[in-house]
Length: 158
Length: 158
DNA sequence: AGTGCGTATGATATAACGTATCAACCCCAT
DNA sequence: ATGGGGTTGATACGTTATATCATACGCACT
Ligand SMILES: [Zn+2]
Ligand SMILES: [Zn+2]
Ligand SMILES: [Zn+2]
Ligand SMILES: [Zn+2]
Image (cartoon, rainbow over all chains, first blue to last red; front, side, top):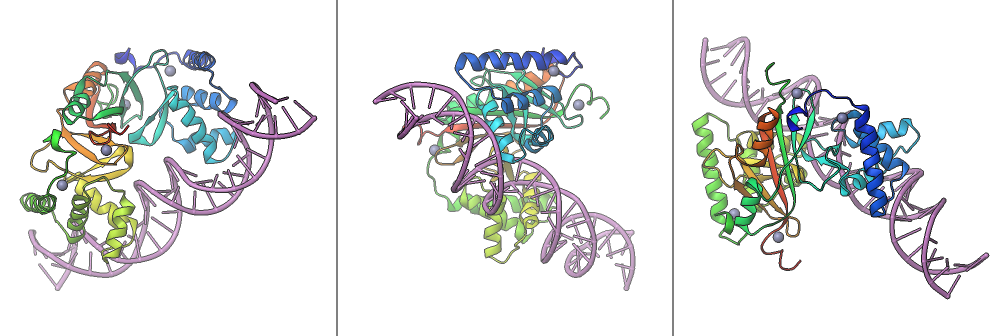
């Protein structure tokens, strides 16, 4: 999957499946999948890239779903807290989760040329952060792992 | 070193040595270690924690070294570009490098309780990001690796 | 029905972070 | 000396994020 992730793909199913999964999970966990929250997830899924909060807010505003920053930030907080979306620290932006099914610790690959972002998974206990934390006696609660560079499509051009 | 990094330590030498190393490196590389740049590095070294650009700017302003955001951002850009300081994406903040001697790919451990930040080192080719990138055919130019959690001093209290 | 509680929204303002731009200045090398 | 590169000063602006207070709604308990 990861090695296909930068490739084009049929995208309608992304949105439909993503929203359906999220809705089901919300039901299971007694979370309120409100209109705004769902719409923000749909926007993230349909753009299929990292989006800034104000970019999302613009769409919401155009649809009459809210016009003030907290509207977007509240929805995004809900989505990220519950694993439906992730925050990309490097970009101050948000992206829909592409592994909604399972609990996971994402790694992001960010192409600086085409701006596409791919989400991979990796055990945080393994790898550099886990090792450094164990050495320091540090308890990791959240790991940010983001690589910036060139995707397979953009690397040859450079 | 890493396992001592959260511990108290004599701190005057941190500042003196850090500035001296940076000055020497600048000489070697024909970089201009101007007053503002040096002072910002000193501030970062003396606070020994991640600081926001505006927090640094406040100090500069108090000392008559500049009062507008670009002053701080320029100095920080110089320091980060040349490896004397690092940007912590998770905090939108900056910290003096604690491994000035060698080229390195830092990993940061950020305590959410006491706000201390420790810099460890690790080969980026190893570990999760490198693996994910190779699988995806992605060329990594910069890797952000930041763990948020509790340091050894704060973990027991929690 | 009435009360209290928790969650979600609405709305305004402000904080925090970061950049664009342009003119002035300084150093120093051709 | 002069011209170009890097540095600085200064103003303005753009972007991202949060604080705060008020309101609405569903739900449980009495
Ligand atoms: Zn898709
Ligand atoms: Zn690309
Ligand atoms: Zn120190
Ligand atoms: Zn701590």
